[in-house]
Image (tube, rainbow, N blue to C red; front, side, top):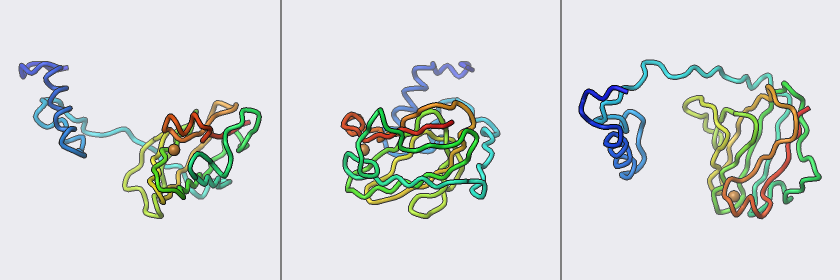
Length: 168
Ligand SMILES: [Cu+2]
């Protein structure tokens, strides 16, 4: 890292943190004044093709439940084929946000409440705000086996707001 400005790494980190404390920020806004340079080009992310999706998985979130059930290690909730591309539709019916997390695979958010995502990115978690919905597309490119998906709020997952995806 270029330290020629005389501003140390810790000072730069402190500047970024203080910018974050003042509310939502952009990456450009966060690095402004730190002497850090943004890359010219960000990582390229090829779009997963909605037309190639072979299934839509609907996940209805209620308080403590996914599709009305709690986690059972002995049950497989979703079975999918290795290499398949699928769409997951997450509907949150209750008055609390549920950050939905999928293990093993990265996905691309397609839309939230039907509004297309403004930019493409790889994610493993999407927050689904209260009474809202989100859709994402995922390709099970590798790693056959059993994977969990769950709400990422610790006490929700601890109470069984979780399911099992088996890819084979
Ligand atoms: Cu939750």
